[in-house]
Amino acid sequence: MSDDHQAAGESDPTSEKLVELAKRRGYFFQSSGAYGGVGGFYTFGPQGAALKGNVEDAWRDRFAVAEGNMEIDAPTIMPEPVFEASGHLDGFDDMLVECPECGESHRADHVVEDNTEYEDAESLPIPEVEEVIAEYELVCPNCGAGLADQDVETFNLMFATNIGPGDSDPGYMRPETAQGIFVEFPRLKEYARNQLPFGVTQIGRAYRNEISPRRSIIRTREFTQAELEYFIDPEEDEPDLEAVADVEVTLYPASEQNADDGSEIRTTIGEAIEEGIITSPWVAYFLGVAKPWYEAVGVDMDRFRFRQHLSGERAHYAADCWDAESEVDGNWIEMAGFAYRSDYDLSKHAEHSGDRFTVFRQYDEPKTVERATVDPDMSYLGPEFGGDAQAVVDELEALAARDREAFEGDTVEIDLEGESHEIPVEQTGFAVEEQTEAGEHITPHVIEPSFGVDRLVYTVLHHAYREDEVSGEDRTFLELEPEVAPTFVGVFPLQTDDELEAEAQTIAAELREAGLSVTYDDSGNIGRRYRRQDEVGTPFCVTVDYESIEQEDGGVTVRERDSTDQKRLPIDDLAETLSAIRAGDLEFEEL
Image 1: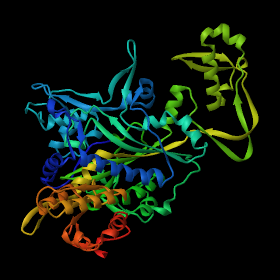
Image 2: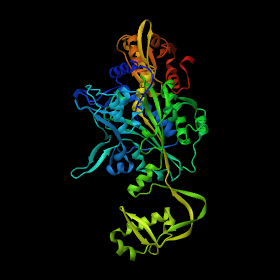
Image 3: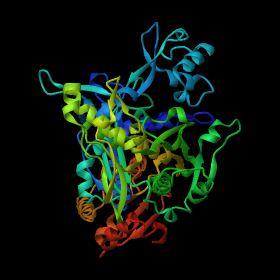
Image 4: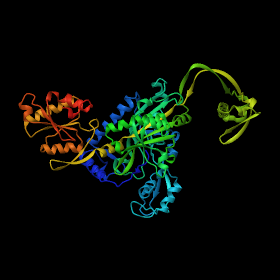
């Protein structure tokens, strides 16, 4: 995930209130509080775990089930060679500046963004960040000491570990779930019957040793990702753009970000492709799929946009990338990245592992093609190169495949471990032959929608936070979508009474059997119970009163959270009616 981006306008206090509500009502709180807590790690309480689970289920339904993609669950610790191949050992860094007085480490780009007009300091080279810190005389956020003379250094974000005892193998906790999919591609392609395109999804934990975690669950060291790796044939596979062409989106392309008077563009996916604002049809397709999904789970579309990465902030593997961003307290935060990873990952793992990360593309009809081949004379190469003879053969084969003109002279030059060697062409067995081929092996390209679940949960809560007044009393409530609300219905007896409580318990059990998430509450007066459920975002409350038990199907009172309107419904129809409302097949106002 990339950085947060400052939006215009002053911050409001909603986040402070939300964090306090989250702790009080069991959404999320800092972990290991009994030992003073530790930065960047949070526990999701009963309400938060349920909300998070519902968001994950909704994502799975849309991006795995509805799209016909597979799902796997890979380990969170992987051996070092995986991350050598992926580039994370060398290219997964943040900029660190250390305070000379208190010794506190800070993200240098965050210090710049928080105290200057620079919005995307992450995209700047380190020397320029150092110049900005000096020019603005920026200071340590912790103690106020000057940072102008301090070096800005790179810091790798991966958590290192060892696999096994003794002289164990080094490993790392994965910084993204994607590598767990890429390294298993040789087997996964078999499950897909070697047919492109196909997608593989995964929902799981990832770990990044953030320099300065902040803003509760927005920037943490352990978090959940929901990722889709979609493998395509770049020459033949095209997305169904008609299905998303009319989806309206707000875009903030790199060209507008770099312009002095640049601004967001409101358009449709179809128009964005036609006008070249989005250059990858596949990225455009998944933006079109994601936008209505975000709206369905409760993201405010007036505070939502897709922002294109600037060239300096793109990950090492991304040819292009767009972020789904939400505005929270005056800041734009990234919730997802939609990257065109080309064949980077599969090619790197093929190079480092020696396994085959390709798919066989069969031609419609066999083709006769010319192939440059070599058949070296080993009686010459063996004495000449000894143990390096096979490496020479490999270099000759690779050179013949990419540049047959190199063999036109009397000798051909190859590079072996940085040293140049000339070999007589007659000893290479070079030839150009006609071959009939039924197909070819291709390395698929990858489109990656990568969702940060924790940030999405925070956004959903923030965008759902409401304050109003009911019957002269202040009320706080979460206007959560029924699909993701932790609890769908609360069931109450009107007052303490054995018969009322027994009937309420029976109704609660029946609603649970119908697949609804139910809480039972008989503590305090009815108004206080309503307020508790409003504050945790429960869409409906059912109250059992004396009419419910004294009359034949005397019904129950059903109260809707947002409007506080109440309707009388028959008990026999209650489960079916509430299930229809949750599924979106019925509106409360229609009852």
